[in-house]
Image (cartoon, rainbow, N blue to C red; front, side):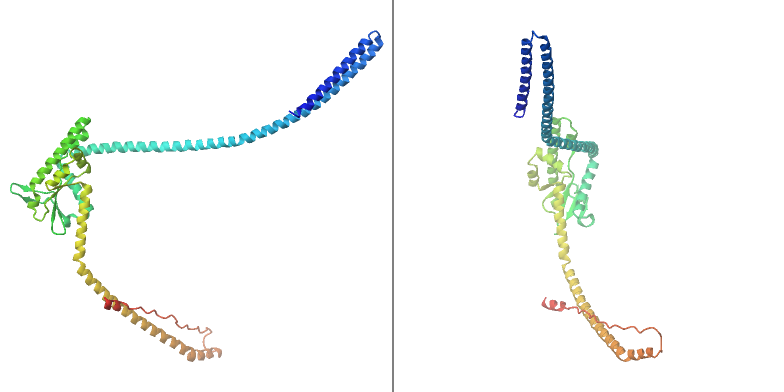
Length: 398
């Protein structure tokens, strides 16, 4: 604003000169109107003066306008630079944002592709699981298959617990009661010469029907029936009184249900099922609880084996201890003999160097013998290490 004020005043000043010249020309023209020669002269002078003033004005105006344009151009460049400085961080931020958005989009695409692949795999797995479940349900509908499956599951648990068939348990043992032949599914032998009876004949028909039911109302009916069937089987198993037929059996029988889900479904409908079973000397066991029980029995067998072999282990340890003492004695004797041999070897070398080697070297100086030099014989200076025999001291103390 301050830089434009002198230019404006200068322009007004030039305009004043032009206006004054024009007024002077008009006045002179009026006064000399009656004298034509003078009019022409003054008119020429006025025209020339006006022309000169106009040219001067135009030059000055052009110069001032050029300066003003340079000033405006400089100011414009400064403002453009200032704006550029303001915009540059924004441009960089936008560039970085675009880069981040691109990376995010790339990551999103990759993640989406991975999720899509996983969903496909899950869908395939779900279809396969559904088919396998259907096949299993169809197979378990047959009583002989269901019974064999329970026995295989039971045997597998026994193997995992370390209770192998030929030494820790018997399958399909028969005994006679007053009315009929009783056949438990498995007898587990315990370390104290006791026997544990296990039964695996669990009714699963209603549970399998509940799985296949489409309507929730029918599913609930079948699950209630499943709980009733389990309770009825507990009652029948209790009547067999296995503990009376197997005199070394504790006064209870383990009812093995070959799937945690089978027992859970029954307990959801009949929460008192476990208490009712215990009151009838029946313990309900699933793979999870039975494996823990079998592991405990296997540990008892291991402890009994260790205690039974304790005397034999002690005798073997004493024999090994005595052999170590004899072996150490032999090593010490061998070390003494080696030390004696080294001592005699060093004495022989000393005698050879003092009595034999000087005469042999004289032969070489007299030109007798081979041109080869007699090599120096080195003595042995490494002593043998003595083995400390502290075992006898410890054995006396013990």
